[in-house]
Image 1 (cartoon, rainbow over the protein chains, first blue to last red):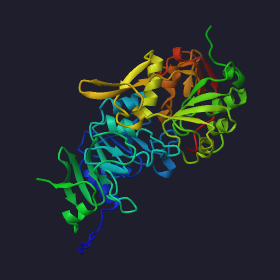
Image 2: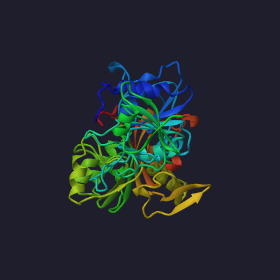
Image 3: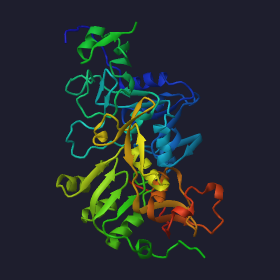
Length: 219
Length: 227
């Protein structure tokens, strides 16, 4: 890396706030376990976005105060949540019908890799993972109207996560529409990755140096 | 007079055979029929295939059933948990078979079984290792894979309220897999927090109609805890 200009990667809360800013009122949204869960904290309650959880919860609200926990009310990450006025419960097959039937406007997932053709790998890091756990990731990736990904721009060892082709086992093919990283916001288009936004102080070339696939400037 | 309510756990578990496929409800500890799992441990059936979302936590319940060597195969979406020690040990030693199924496909396979649909097509898993060896079909320009229904010999279900006809309600996120498992099995056994008189459950509020239920046992244990 040759850049001399200092830059500060987006923090997790900044990433979550950036995603939240792009979610309009009225959308039905599933937030994946991990980094994406925090997005809900950045959507103001008066903007009515309806959050779905795979375990049959629609209209989820924020985490409860400690003395107001309802032991039967958890989300897919098995954390206690609350229910907003207007919320509803359903069973698992109906909950996944919301996902698989194309009723969710948006799903936000974490990922190990996203490819320039929209392929996503987010459930196993090797073909011989001892006991890989897929959960609802494949249903969400294939079923939601839009799939956005939130992840670090590079892995802990510095290797790029925005790649030409995924090397990890796939979760879904051609599914990702947009990626929010700690360095940039990138759309997945027919041309490949198109950069919408870069963290202040980082140049397009420096971003490219941290990315396996070719990046395109928004025109 | 129809009365599906049984007075003992032994009566609830009677007749479960070795080699059965057992569907077990719950998502984490919520809606998980722990008393029935303990009843199955006591009852003794072995060589079981278990379908449920997770593969057991710690050394109790499903983990204990596996630890006792009674489970041949587990069908689930998420074998990891906060403490999956028993499953991982058995799996690494090659002593238990694992079939990983995407969570929505798992639920749909059971709903299909309950509805008399032997095979259905879904976009979930297309292009992934889940699709290997499965029939592919293009319908209106999109590729789908065929998935088989997953019928159970036995379902273990947790309900909030039940009556003697087997009508059930659930509490909040405790519903999860329970209604589809009740539909999908030849013998559906329910543990319920509350037993109501016939007619006390408003027909508009019944989630699982009694036709899907065979036996009900009253287990008023309170709130779930620990995941």
